[in-house]
Image 1 (cartoon, rainbow, N blue to C red):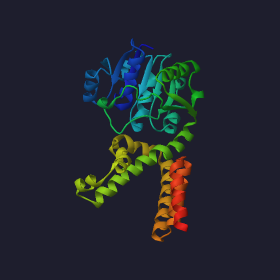
Image 2: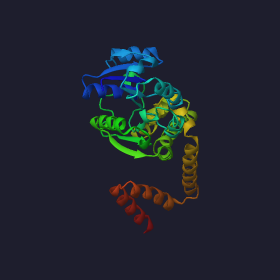
Image 3: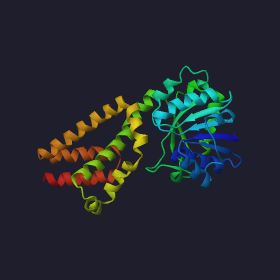
Image 4: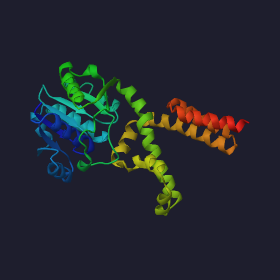
Amino acid sequence: MKHISIIGVGLIGGSFALDLKGHFPGVYISGIDQNDAHLKEALKLGIIDQTGDLASVSSAELVLIALPVNTAINVLIQVLDLIPNQAIVIDMGSTKQAICEAVAAHPKRANFLATHPIAGTEFSGPSAALKGLFKNKTNIICELNQTSTVLAGKAIALFETMGMHIRYMKAIDHDKHIAYVSHLSHISSFMLGKTVIDKEKNESNIFDMAGSGFESTVRLAKSSPAMWTPIFEQNKENVIETLNEYIQNLNQFKAYIENDDFALVLLAVLNMCIEHRNAWKCELLILYWLYTLF
């Protein structure tokens, strides 16, 4: 693949471009983005070789869509209408069911591969792009059976060259599971940051007191609201389900503390240590528990 179009030249699209250039020196990348400043920056940083528009995908061999999920669907439909018959279109959004359903009956559905690389940072824009971002990261491919075997094979070979680990699942299962392991953690981070700032309007005092634990927990709160709000909207039912379970656990933990039932607090934390196989932490907690009993 020599001629590649990347729609959305931010963190994900830009990082993909850098890896393409690193592994395939002869590749020529056209960048498409509604943000002119992003295109200029991507050109300056050498992420893309030229700027283009949607019409330019008509000559592309591969089109990567790295856009917020609320805009990706309409763009995907337009791209499928324009691409050559042997081109492949890859979407890298964080929700998969809505976009797969939107193009299920499209004449060129077989040209589309729905993916979600579990990679990223809390930063955005071309300057956030990182070479090697996808190395040793999991890339989830959904509804593989709906994509041309030949085209999917080319894309998977490309992913593996970049060092990705490939997993396959149905779009509906992806959205359910990702709500727990990704979407909920972002909501927790957003709300923790909000809780602290609402309680202490003098931010400098709070953050002077905060240690690395707080910093790592709220790191995700720096993520783009314009990207995450549509994700919560598209995955609304699964997000609500995860929130209900999370709130239930929080309320239970709160009740243990209110009732001075710290043995149950210890058990709750101990169970998490066991689940995460932090053996040394488990041993310390067990010793502490035994100490409090005698």
